[in-house]
Image 1 (cartoon, helix red, strand yellow):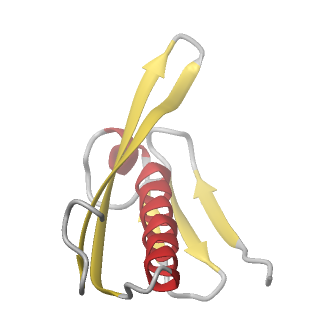
Image 2 (cartoon, rainbow, N blue to C red):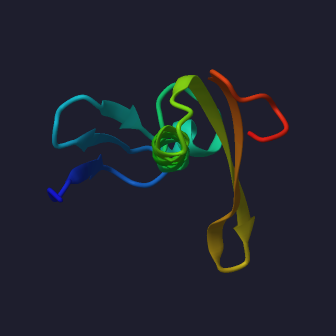
Length: 112
């Protein structure tokens, strides 16, 4: 398996500063800041990227499992909801909830 890399760059103090997040392939490069992470301002944040990675990994694994079981999917859509909360010792991610819908030929909801 190939090794994958990503990078983060940051300038300035936590609330006034800004930064960027990028992946080696160049497909994702995005700005992030305190405001985009904690105040719903424009930009991305690490938690959003965790969610995208988790949803992408799960969706591909489900496609593999369905295909190997003889039911290759027509479509799979997964949404990840990443919870973040502040505690006395910092921030943490208490949960990542995945919601998946799929179209799979020859398979109805019960066996799916």
